Image (cartoon, rainbow, N blue to C red; front, top):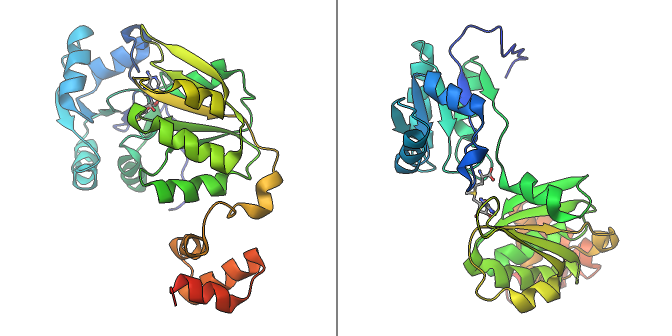
Length: 285
Ligand code: SAM
């Protein structure tokens, strides 16, 4: 893409507004968010039923169209066309900021690729809300979002994060929380964490303690959750692969785009073992 310069408030071209919505407490809707949703020609919503309720509450009568992870690819072209026809559009997700572990990224890319302005509004977001009350160092922090659902994949992802010296921020659902914390304990050691759940809602709660302490009490915890993990000391930097086996180690490099041959070589170098051994193990010979 060529260099672009966008002057958000003197540009008269039709605009895509990225509008955050509450993550639980309706009072977290900003005046500007309401006004923007009232004034645009159309709202692209992740789930129109969810957004309809929000609109009813704030007397917003703007027409809704759906844009979710399964139709974003096709819908973005149509939305770009609508902008080109002179319509202004707001994008919302079900909760919090669009694009943050939510649909919207492809649309933003398409709008920018067509040289049209994208104007963001600040507002509710679960990660930052949890981080500022965590009591853990907020800078630098690394927002990961959701880990993979499959345990092996999750292990690989966490093994790579273990060496980082940033505070880590994850999204997780209640039925996976225990397994995730157990894998974190294996990968990170017993670091301090903060589990923030039901943020901004009636049952908002923060559990602050070591990973093993939180595992003890996390059975039956419900609601939406953010996990904040204390920064590591970098000690695991050279051995991020320690908690995965040789085959997973090779697969990791293949996933990153390496040829199998090179992935085997790199895993052998990391582990300081003969290439032949890695080759045999990977191909299960
Ligand atoms: N776009 C949203 C944002 O800006 O935070 C995130 C959407 S993502 C699909 C949903 C996840 O965010 C939940 O599974 C949970 O991890 C986290 N989340 C959303 N609302 C939350 C809340 N009220 N309390 C704690 N975590 C929340």
